[in-house]
Image (tube, rainbow, N blue to C red; front, side, top):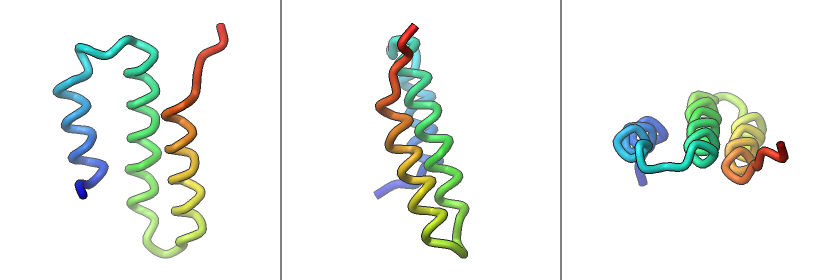
Length: 63
């Protein structure tokens, strides 16, 4: 399994082919995932950040 940084690098290589909304959702989800990886001292906070990352990947703009 890779790290969030590796995932970010892959996203950067592929993002030109993403629709704008998908690209934004992926960017946000990876950002939250990167933040969760930094949380070493509190597994509860890490879990919450991972949950936010998961939900960010499914968020939709209702406008």
